[in-house]
Image 1: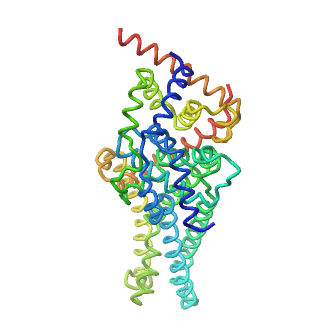
Image 2: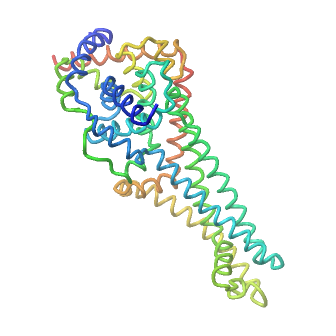
Image 3: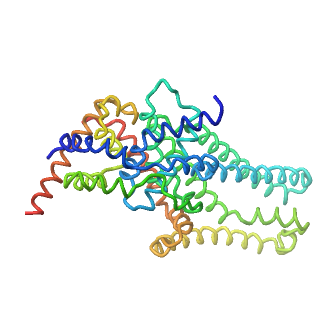
Length: 232
Length: 174
């Protein structure tokens, strides 16, 4: 039997299928009132929340920069963190714009390419945020401690005065520690891959650290492109 | 048109094309729970997109595009996170069990076809579903966003694979 014979046989069943299969119209009507569980809407809400939080951070950092204009030890880390926050803000806007542009009634290949690009953007954003946080946590801490508690961390840690050299060494060691921590997390992600499967969130975090999410997303996008172009 | 009229129109059209829900959900999900969740996601997306539906075009074509986009996105993980955090109801939108029983009556060939479908990539699966549903290569190509030549080439490849599966099945049962 070939595909065309099967097609004919299944076509004969279509009428029965239409007659016998019951659609719960009341449930469909009820779902109209409860559209909120559409997956991408949740994704959009998540990104919108991130955007809102980042705007709050950028405004707060702007105020912090303004009040510490004559104090380079606070100004420089605040500007550094602010640059990161602004870049993140731009990224959120890009994601929201991509989500707003998505029209599921467009051809399948077009929508899948757009979704693939969005997925890659999100994965890259998460990875960069995690990596940068591990290496650059100190400027963030300096700004937060000064901004919220009025405590000068530089002074406490001996960055000013006689212990300056010890502090610089400590700072360099911290950066190295951050790089090492990223390496350890990467190793853990690969080592405990199986155990993480029980927790979807942990699995996703592990995948993103190990680079598997990105590899899979790139592979999916490549498959869509190949499907679109292959003719032989 | 008032909201109530639009809602009624949508439900009527969905009722008329409910088998698309069954076919797409069955092509992309093996287990019952996933099929039920996918059918619900498809309906939600259809409803959200319905205000943009242009009545000059066939509803079934529009529905296939949306259903396949939702199914493939779901399979590729674009919406996986949300499905895990927002549990969907246990209520079945369509009677999958009755449909399964009916498809079971279609014979051994259908079982081999289902096995083949599970082995295909997501886009080839879409193409196969459309072919079985009677869409021409040009129509399938339009739904998927590829060329008709591409669609024809891929369908031929699927036909060959099915032939191999059938032969394998015949050898296995001997």
